[in-house]
Amino acid sequence: MKKIGLALGGGGAKGLAHVPLLEVLDEAGVKPHIISGTSIGSIMGALYASGMSGAEIREGLDRIIIARGDSMRDLHRKKDAFKILRFIDLEFSRGGLLKSDKFIEYLYGNLGAKTFEELATPLKIVATDFWSNEQVILEDGELLPAIQASMGLPGVFTPVVRNERVLIDGGGVNPVPHDILREECDIVIAIDVMGTRKPRKHPLPNVLRAVLHTFDIMQNSIIAQRLKANPPDILIQPDVENVEILEFDKAPSVYRQTAPAAEFLRRELDRVL
Image 1 (cartoon, one colour):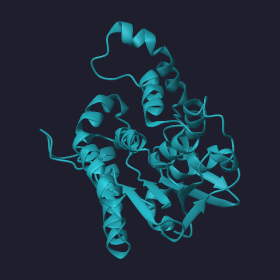
Image 2 (cartoon, rainbow, N blue to C red; image 1 turned 45 degrees about the vertical axis):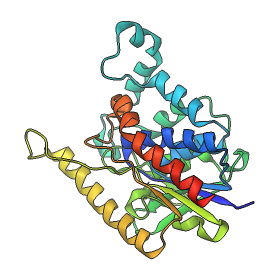
Image 3 (cartoon, rainbow, N blue to C red; image 1 turned 60 degrees about the vertical axis):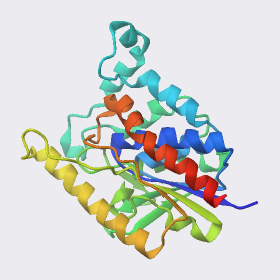
């Protein structure tokens, strides 16, 4: 049987696009031999590697995400979502707006696995060494700090110190870490959820949007170079438009925009497998 590697890329709330694609893998009976993830991809990767199905991940996210258009009944049903408000860190001197450790602990309240070794499927998480600019692959020991490090976007989430290294978002070095799976797999599936942006009514961005979009531009450049140097067997790039890093309330829109990519993945799985 062929060994399949699955790489889940970063992209903030656009990473919700991973969910319908994981559901397609489940429908096809595809079980990855190993999973890699960066930033939001490390969250989705850990959930999937723990043994959760794509449908179960969607259900769990629906319980905590307040979507635009939710009724009062929906808000009452999702009352746990308001607990996320306590994770905001107003002490910017600490390096971030959100306390990622508390955010991750909440999101993974029912994960079960505390270490990489307890996961049902092997997982590699990518972070960036802030001072050396090097890629750091985390694949053993405590799981939650590794995820926290991989999604440590400067100015948004607080960085992590692990083994005396200051670690930040893995998107700084490898936004879609498919290449780290090649030696261990026969087939590599890479999912790039960076999406696209179009000018809005007021095309000049504010300071935060300018900073975050600049980071997106750099990530897209890194992705293009790595895809050219070491192309995956299946590349999926959902065309998700105008979703900001923390706009998780746009989940229904992200899922709808991912539908064409889900169909493309089905065809690609038929072709390759």
